[in-house]
Image (cartoon, rainbow, N blue to C red; front, side, top):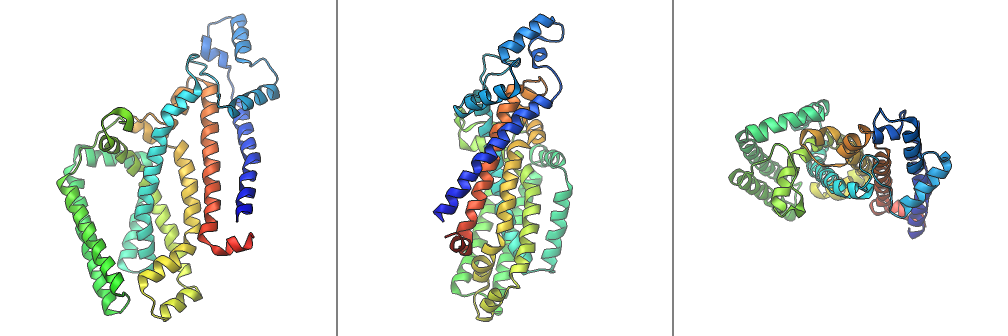
Length: 377
């Protein structure tokens, strides 16, 4: 297993080199002169030549690439062309925590909802709940993120009483459904004593959470972002991050739950699962321990891809909620003013994180499937 992990890490080296070369080459193919972004369109040819010499743009392509790559390996991504006194690393360091927090929160919220939803719809396939969930997820997939953001702002900011009562009713309905499902499972002997206790405990926690949310419903801001280090505390930070994260999570919930449902339905027809059910194993044990693990490979892969996409693809959401994240840094501070060093450094950092996340996903397969560990020895 250690050998396989070492091989996977070594394979990252050529991938990262290709990523860095593609990042550098991409900016070379974009039309326009960076010197114009510095001096404006009315400068003389001599002034443009002088700025190109100062920026090193008069040197051959490969010489500039290897110089830039060497500096990047030492943590130096250069300075902004538009703001020469500001380093690209400092700009990324100020924006990356915002994007990481929003992406992590949205992915966590999506998995928290999609996992139980996918398991239940797979187990209760073709039921009323499954059909209702299928319709809801289809609607969520069809709604663009900017529309979801505007709808959430309308509900949570301008009409906060609607989601407040909606959360309470949803929690009460979920708790009642859990109690009904537990009673039904007891009649069919699908749950043992421990499973019954856990089911009623979850129902009680869901109901209590609904009452707490109803009593202490927070006031959510329309725009802006309070950092954890701002001195306002974690609660203020989460209030400003909740709506952007929920906006991004809605689509991910739909995709994750439908994918998990499809894989779980296939796994539930496997011989070892049917054998476990025939032996009288509790339903919750069969679903969570026997069926969920082999069904989660596609979900983990998609979650890794989604996390990488969220790190660089949240421009619209960041604009609507006025978030100082990486998406706005690349577009507003890089592409629009033609600040090529900002674009190069930002894209390189996001691409590197994307590659590392997918490598972590590949390594997680060893923990999920013992057959892979044995096959790699």
